[in-house]
Length: 259
Image 1 (cartoon, rainbow, N blue to C red):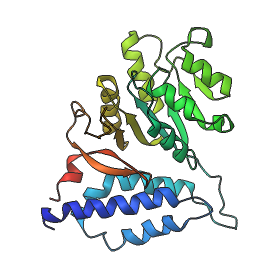
Image 2: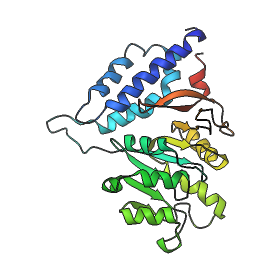
Image 3: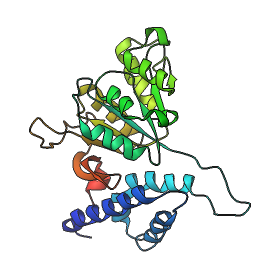
Image 4: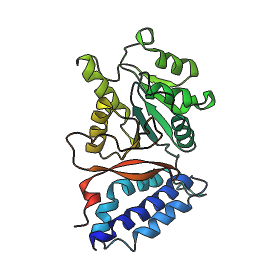
């Protein structure tokens, strides 16, 4: 397959995956079968399989874990997956945060850190009625020493994991360790205006095979790609998150090269 077809391949991939992520539910398993049907005709295309590997694996894994038969002895409990959220501690009021959080909560739970800025906005965007779908990972060892965003989560009734970064590492390292603990088992990681610290977390997400998305609007309301994720190969490409939100996605070399 020629490299000239890569933009069309990625566009088609984003549309199919976006549709499936937006429409799938245990009550509406059609997107699950759509992915299974699409897999057969492309099974022999090694280049396309490489291009789709990361994002398709995450979504297909979600469908496989979540799908349950309508009846019979093979029914099993639905496993709800999670999306990790992070971003700048200096993030101002950004309406897209609440919009994305609300959409994700329709089908998945949320993992987030404990700081001001992006973490706090994500916590505040979760309705009190959905607090059970929110898990906050705190560096603080207990509620008494936790910052305001954590106290807000406690008041809401959300799950709070204290000492998520351990207790032996220096404080700066604990924040990274906390974030690594937070994105474990997540189907995707989403960052809002990621800075140096967020990009370090994004690096660990990429190394762990977690798809990374970013929203990076500027003061002029124009979205520019964030700085490159350090120490990993790849680049930011335009994408659609949850079939609805225009964003940036980190694309690894296997997704950029057909051969």
